[in-house]
Length: 135
Image (tube, rainbow, N blue to C red):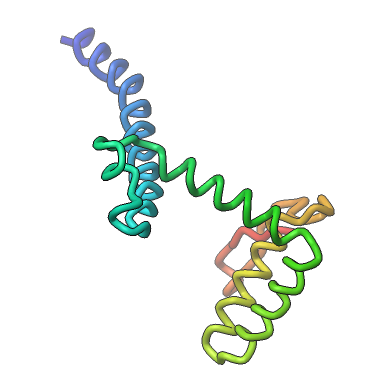
């Protein structure tokens, strides 16, 4: 009986992470594939070719990000971004959300290599509690 239990646990330790990984990846791909629903019905790939291609939304999202990056890195793109940011800065609630998310994004993807160099523990919000912080 002890060996049977050990074998079941060993099998579970092998298969559970694999199944969880597959389910999470499937969820994320399906979520990104949902972006294809933003296209008009006549332009949706499923309607054009007659069947669904899993991951096509992920590819389309990658292409959109790449093209957006290419456009925004030139002079005209930078002026468009400045105009858009100026417009968003005039809307009270949107201004707070946009500036916070922009600051976080710039910190995470900073090219200087100085963002988040060290993880530390600090006492916060009171002396008996510890919180992770990034330097």
